[in-house]
Length: 380
Image (cartoon, rainbow, N blue to C red):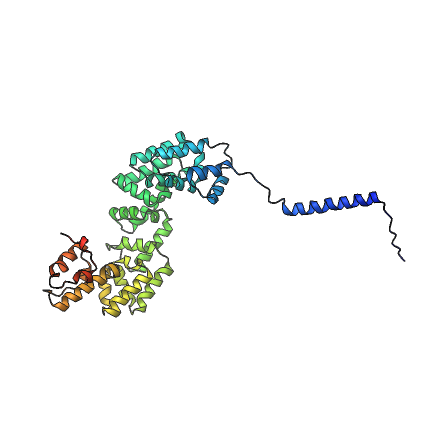
C-alpha cells in the first residue's frame, strides 16, 4: 500500500512557487502572442522609393523591394529613373519597365543603359518603343541588341519595318534571334513561301517564327491538310497564320458551328481556301452572322462559302444598316439595277453614301436614319 506524504511548506516557499508559476504563465502567453516564426522586420527604404518615385501600390512596392533588398541607398535607382526621364519616357512607362524587372534599378546608366538607348535612338524608337527595348534589357547585352537589330536590317529593307517587329515581339531582344529565325526561314522556303510572304509573316506575327522549326512545320502541314489550302495558293501564308493562332480543339469547334448550320466539310474548306481568316472570328460572331444570312435572308451555305467576306464584316455597323437601305430602295423601286448585298457591303463607307444614300434622300427622306449615318459624316 502506497502512502502519499505531503510535505508542509512554509510561507516563503509558497511565495516562491507562486512567483515561478506566474512567470511560467506570462512566458507561455507572451510566446503565443508573438510567434518566433513571424519576426518583426524593418521596412526597407526601397518600399518608399517605389511608392513615392514610381507610383507603385504598397503591395507592388513590397514585392519589388524583395528583388533589390541588397541595395544600400537609392542613389543608383534614382539615377536610372532620371535617365529614363531624359530619354523621354513618362511616369507610366518607367513604372512598367521597373515593375517588369526591378533589378534594372541596379544597372549602370553609363555602361548598360546608355549604349542600348543609343541603338534604339538610331532606329528612331521613342515612347512605347523605348519601353519595349528597356523592359527585357536586364537579360541581354548591348552586343546582343546590335546583333539582333543588324540581322533584322538585313532581312527587311527599312528601319520602319524593324521597328514594327520590335513593337510586336519585344521579348525576342534577349534571345539568339538570328539562330532561331534562320532555321524557320529555311522551313518556310521549303514549303514554297516567297521572300515577300515571309516578310509579311515576320512583320505581322514575328512570334510564330521564334518557335521551334518542328512546331512551325506542324503548323504549315495543318494549313495544308486540315484547311486544304495548297502551297501555291496566295492564301497559303494566311492559312498558316490562322492555324498558328488557335489550338486544334478550337479549330474543330469553329468547324462545328458551320456544321450546325448545315454546312458540309467541303463547303467549310471552300470558304477557308478563299479567306482563312473567316475562322478567326469569334464563335458568337460566326453564329450571329450565319443566323442572319441563312435564317433571316435565306442565303445558302454554298453561296456564303464562295462569298466569305460577308462573314467578317460587322453585322451591326455595316451589314444590317446597308441591307436595310437596300431593302428600302428596292421597295421604292428607285434603283436602276439589282444590286447584291455582297457588292454593297464591300464598298467603303464614303462610296456607299455617295452611291446609295445621297442620290435618293429627296425620294426617301428617312434614308439617313435607316442607314444609321450621321449628317456630319457625309461628304459635302
